Image 1 (cartoon, rainbow, N blue to C red):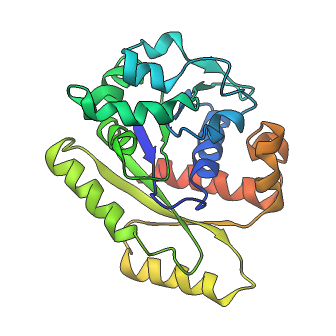
Image 2 (image 1 turned 60 degrees about the vertical axis):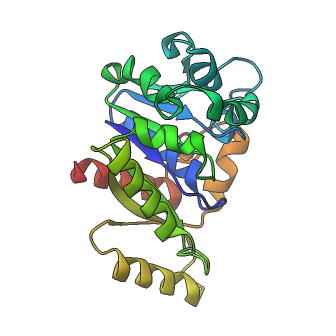
Image 3 (image 1 turned 135 degrees about the vertical axis):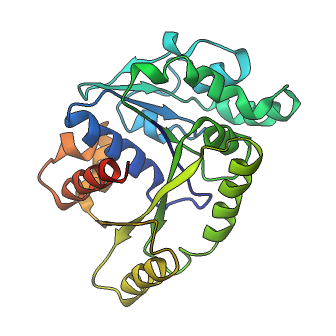
Length: 250
């Protein structure tokens, strides 16, 4: 099963969700691949890997490289990484000129999908061809939604994009769920966003809510997912709960 973790808004906990959800499922015994499709390469650096040391997803897209030769091991047992580099930003400019440009990532991942229980794609905070490639390659989409005032802004546009990709390019694509992130129970707006998301999207909003948590924020600077950095913090607990919920929805 391949999941795209996507939202065109930045700062919503997208990479945090991709890294920690993948790590929690690997910790439970599954074989997991995380694919970094963001030119900022935060998922790569957040796992302690220098984004400039090795080629990754841009080589798959632009050069047709076999991703099996580019996959790196991580410090999390049973969890591998197809890294990103800043070169992917230039690749995004080149993609429109390539034939069948929406299917380039899918072709690469089709070679390795059977080797893993789950694949997670960390998308960039845009709706460009990098994200479209991820949506075409994926079976399901997980959408992180920040518990802030502007959270719902653009969400309908993303869901429309997913529907368009499903209609034209990937009939099997479905939304696995919306995950509410960065919840601060001390603020009224955080609770209001939760209420609104669950009211408008009752069938696809995950029950699990990821809180604002200092340990979650610190973990990437140490090159670790939070379950390795502080497995007993509330952020780790939330992502373990989300992992169970993702499994149950299949």
